[in-house]
Length: 361
Picture 1 (spheres, one colour):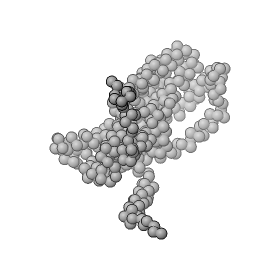
Picture 2 (cartoon, rainbow, N blue to C red):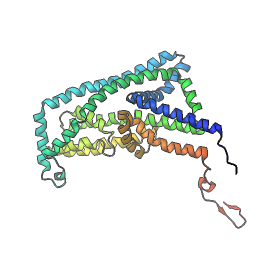
Picture 3 (spheres, rainbow, N blue to C red):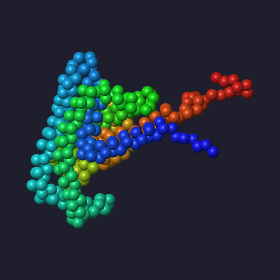
Picture 4 (cartoon, rainbow, N blue to C red):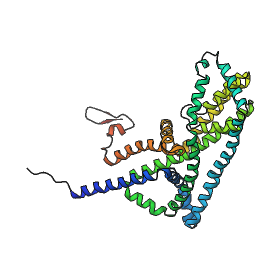
């Protein structure tokens, strides 16, 4: 009895792929601290890719000058705003710590108001529950401090890597193009999906947050809420919270207004929040954000949860991309190995036949 011998070429391919995977795992394991920086560089490369090629090919700028120009734009529109935001928030948080008595009195007024209300009284606001929540929150303070330092390091890494990605863009893209073992159609679908997801999340989420934060801040000022700018910033950040989003800020604020007896402002803020703050979300998603990329809401929600867990803030971009990649890979599988759809399914209308198999129109 003869046994079919495995082709040596196949064995060599398997061994080579295994070695490549092991080396990649080794690299990612030991450079995981800088992974957000590499992901940030990829994000910026995709966002600036077309502009870079226009500058170098049409405007005839040098590679280095073009890359330094785009890095400068990144610093102006990304790093400086973050630095300004941190400089604003730190004094505000310090002021909250100094004015603990004022903060506790506001909290006590909310607790007293909720004590006899049918639904709100079920929320546990006892001293023990609050202390337990504060203890849990305190565990994350070292991580937050470390993440600030980590963010600074990874911004530098991102800009450094971006320079070389742009300078050697043609060689890099050519290498990736030849390394992916798929047809041209599948490669094109992969690139379109990745580009669309990066644009949608890297540009769309900040636009949505800024617009809702500005509208919310105006609302807090109109209805007499203390620190409207601070609350507007917190509202902008809360847009990344799945499902509830900005409601996690303006609903408790409206309850506080009810607790201090400002019923008219409380009702006004609640309506303002539901109609305007929440409404601008729907308007932007069906206009500007749809042009950037029509991402299904479920992919965004679960992608944000996954991404924040894996990559921190950059997970807002790459979390949805990971989940979306499953859909793209299924398309690629169908392109490469699928047998195609039956003709009757592809047809957009029903076709009738007579007894002689002639089409009835």
